Length: 139
Image 1 (cartoon, rainbow, N blue to C red):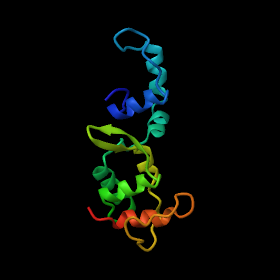
Image 2: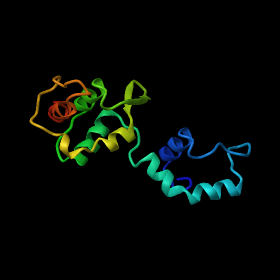
Image 3: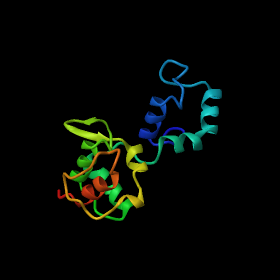
């Protein structure tokens, strides 16, 4: 942990410009900069979120817990295919999904009658159908 942030939170905060670049060689900050950053740590933590970028199966676990229904790794891939869950990078050969999007996706009103895998509607018109399909996808 650094500045009361997990490593991934610190990296995301640096990437998003919420924590300035180090002032010194070797990755160190002036005390005043570190103190000012620490004073805003609650705001920074809220901005970077509580969910790191995750692979499909871990993302499915988080979505399942937040939604109260089973979401599978294939379901996460289905959401990504339809633009509802963006990829943020890769870990080896596996895609990582944006942790902030996973965290924000906890929409309890999104579940409707299962539509079945592969039957997602356009993301701009029927997001709920895609969520239901993702929740019923089989591993």
